Length: 177
Image (cartoon, rainbow, N blue to C red; front, side, top):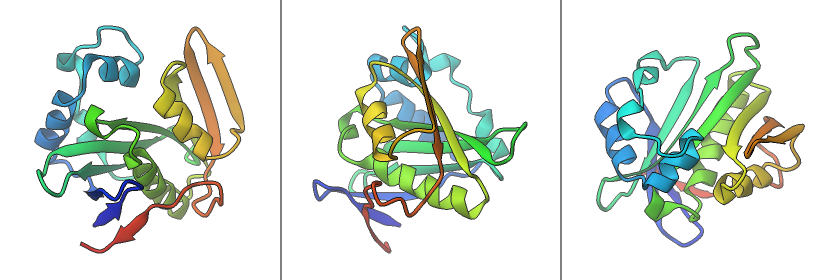
């Protein structure tokens, strides 16, 4: 499937599957050290430490990937993991490769996760980000006011009610591709 970003660029997206290790690893290769640090909340985070065993456990957890339709290169990944203690709560993580950051890919992927979560009975998204991660802060603001927002030691924790039809959430244009 395809989405049209605010700048007119197109991205293809689809659910990720267990066999997508190579595509996810390629996306990780496209991240700068600064993006790795921001995504994994640690300075000097190394690609070799990234584990992809979560791809084998997709089911009630959901992951969506986006790619550039011209090059086929990955441009972003978003997933949620359902909390074991409370099946109505899911932790969200979104990673966008450097060249595509700030163009609306995160918004597209978050909208897709939100629709899937709402259909699956997820009522709350939680997430963490470094306080200096402007992209994550902007994406969080697009969800409206958080139910909870805590900043501690340079890390922000958010909690948002899941509502796919939220008026304040920008809806990207989708086409069938």
